[in-house]
Length: 449
Image (cartoon, rainbow, N blue to C red; front, top):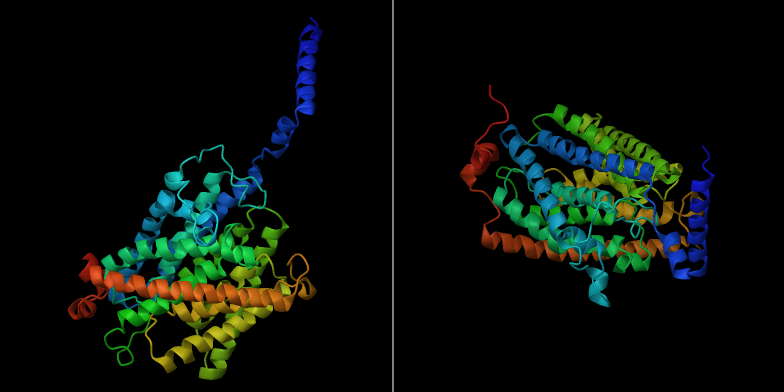
């Protein structure tokens, strides 16, 4: 039996198809432009998404939980878990659309997106997110899930600032409002191609402004408006389990590889660079904090080195895929020392009760990292900034991005906390605070002896 009778028609059909493509420019252009999903990149992004979830629940929850007193352990775990869950739903309802679609022409479109993809309208298993991923074709559902984890982590960071004295209902109402009116516009301005700060050329590889300055400033505002804990500065408020805090810090560090290296959006050398920087920067920051603490207090503490490592993770976030490893180490060394003094010096001098040092680590570390990115990304210093790179010009752009974030977040957070206070009230009663939020809000105990 010969296959020639079947082969000839097939070859003819192929030739005809090629001829039509050649004589129809639109058809040929569409064929060339059609993105092809890269399975390796997609696999890496799915893993990165899971790592960021690990970083939040249980990582952040345990890190925070160990730092509060026994009677408030479950309240912090509950807040982080519930905030993550709420934002996940809001993200697929309208968050993704508002952050990552066009808001139209003019100033409004540069600040906030539209509702064209609300409830994920038009998103299918075949649609890709190559528009947002430097031309890399990954399924749009993958990109949506990855960005969801960033949106959910950011307000979860905030709860540490006013831990042990805020109403659970206030946390939930504030979270929904804050994500809508503060987080989504900042994400749109920084990461969407039509966003205001994106257009200025601001660099934020994985969330220095969007996540850390954003959450740090909101946390400081919350700590000031909710007020100090009863007995603050007088009673012992030591962490009840540094063992759990250590476990949480380790999970944070592991999960941060998805946070930073995943933000490269493809499995290339850029992801490997971000991963390496996410090792060396927090390592340098932890050693820096530990050294300064030992020189200042005579002893190096486990909480100190863990806090320093987190400060280094925060500082390297905006520069993770843009700095060289040596620049990352320098950034980490500076972040560890600066954040130590912000937590032990500035907070004590001003007297505000940021319970778990959200502003001192995330706010200050985020500002330092965002501005420092303009320096360490310079090709002349071993970085990977592109174009005709000017250190002075880029640093100025970074300062503008920091200033916009500070103003937007600061004003927005004050307004939203005031609104929540009017609707449900911010603070629990004195009796509930003394009893502990585990029992008062949730009717449970973390430990039964």
